[in-house]
Length: 315
Ligand SMILES: Nc1ncnc2c1ncn2[C@@H]1O[C@H](COP(=O)(O)OP(=O)(O)O)[C@@H](O)[C@H]1O
Ligand SMILES: [Mg+2]
Image 1 (spheres, protein in one colour):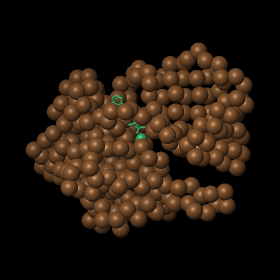
Image 2 (cartoon, rainbow, N blue to C red; image 1 turned 135 degrees about the horizontal axis):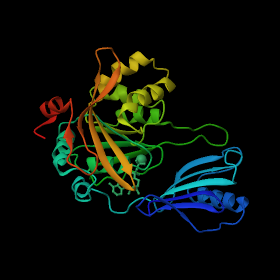
Image 3 (tube, helix red, strand yellow; image 1 turned 180 degrees about the vertical axis):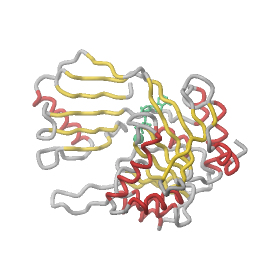
């Protein structure tokens, strides 16, 4: 089971690997669901109350907890538990389970070895973090990896990983350490690779800055439901950091090399596209397909394949 979602006392869903299914479970009243959420948050060392009605935390066993309570959630509380898989996937394992086409494993290795700056994209639960961890396991053992995350999730199979996690402000509103602070801090800790577990705000500016100032081989994930949405998504995040659209296009095109886009269909997760990030003649940021896969038939190459092969090949 990878996900448990509670929308209300009698509205509970799970994902056992074949997509969401509703389960016949009665958790009592909305107040009971709220109490459950508050207790789980407390186990993860976080407060959940009227003043702070949302948490994103990690339970001691590694399970990721997202919860919101009244007044934000109407039904007492809404909970999402994401169970971390114990055995980490490797790229070969992902190929074996049909999530990556066999012909693309060499390309993934070449991207890591060639220190490409890679953005892993996809919708929620499509396997972005899983693929990221699998890629990190391919990083040579003599390299030092700094990971920056909101809540610690990445546990790559690599001997030299320094994890940094963000901190929320305390009750008095002080002591906050943001992802942007951590990316800046990570740069001073002699990283060979900077990894931003999930880029979802203004820290995109620090990420692009790092990648544009000689820190190559960086990896990050960004939520995007389709490859075509990636440029707009980056622009929206960068706007939070006050970056104008034109600056984002220039910086992102210079910083990022490749997008690896994941899709989830009928419970199956797979790598659906390898895209090349570049700036179009019009100045717009664009992701040009280098290879695409529908998850069933043979993968096809796209317009940017030759460039990708030339830069990181032999793939
Ligand atoms: N290729 C895969 N095959 C099977 N399960 C997967 C695969 N990729 C991810 N998962 C599982 O799906 C869940 C969500 O994966 P995760 O990498 O956290 O997604 P995301 O980061 O996109 O939200 C996890 O429990 C993970 O173990
Ligand atoms: Mg993730």
